[in-house]
Image 1 (cartoon, rainbow, N blue to C red):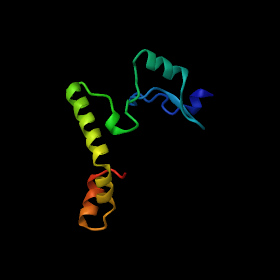
Image 2: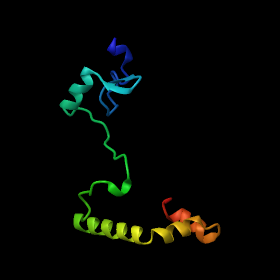
Image 3: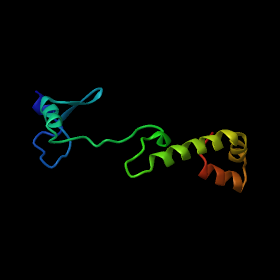
Image 4: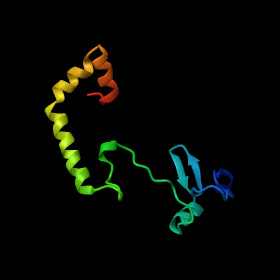
Length: 104
């Protein structure tokens, strides 16, 4: 039965909706769906993907974020060959570039 497979059944301290584990991952039970719809419990939201493409947050200046993003994109494309050369060096400068820069 669903109640035997439930991961969070009768756990009042758990902030997540009731769900069961399947071969494809977690699946909401009917109780879990009701908990989500009634906003009794919720999942934590987190962004998965390129951190540079995250949505602008409410505490950020949207215009400034967009201008700086375009400026940095221009710098990255304009100096792409120089960044690659720095990244491939085998001395201290190359090591420093590998720490600071994302791999090409």
